[in-house]
Length: 72
Image 1 (tube, helix red, strand yellow):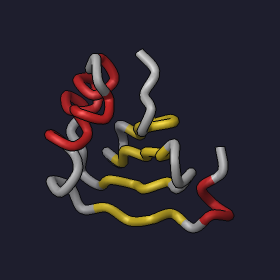
Image 2 (spheres, one colour):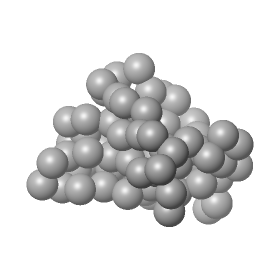
Image 3 (cartoon, rainbow, N blue to C red):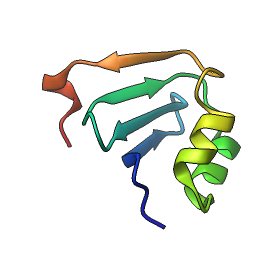
Image 4 (cartoon, one colour):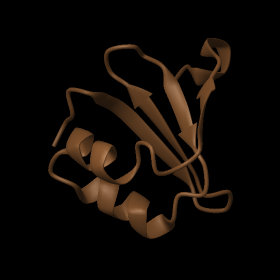
């Protein structure tokens, strides 16, 4: 199901970095050390925003990716 808060995601299983593009701001944040099981559950969640808030936000170290690198 499409999300109103999350525009897109990408996951690199080798580095365990989850990239999240937010719909309203257009900003991309990278979340570090995200287990593959968490990403799989995130992808299959009915509400991406609710899952993100409950299981990813404030649980994993993150960084804002500069605009020039964040485009997708």
